[in-house]
Image 1: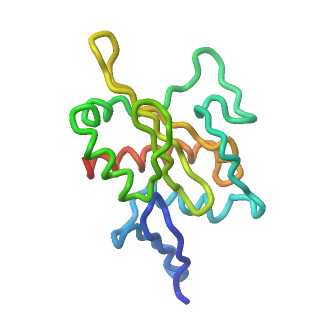
Image 2 (image 1 turned 90 degrees about the horizontal axis):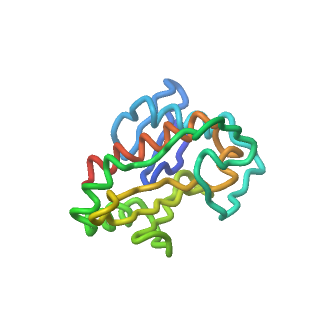
Length: 164
């Protein structure tokens, strides 16, 4: 046909073969979504396989981070989740997420067919603020480039902002 079809973060995604336009969930994809999908299509290894082992972005195989490393988390969103965890459950489930025993609330969310990301949420208390952490499949770099992992995280955070 005229389109390449896939799934991205639980929604149908289409790439128009003639124009190169990308839609996600029936709407025009933003820059981060477009870049993520094109990177997955163009740079992913043909024999890429998920490992089902998850780690922070700074611990991905082959990634060297000096000093304290780069933080990647959703702590700006964590307060919203803390106030309304049911909306978080609902949002994760609507994206095709599966509950996993991780943190106070954990979900494995599909990114693309065959690869996902784990979200680990901890409720806050008097001493600690609520915290949302992304844990990536150790083989994510077989599917997309390192930089694209950050775009995918941004897409996911934007999706949660709309849903929560």
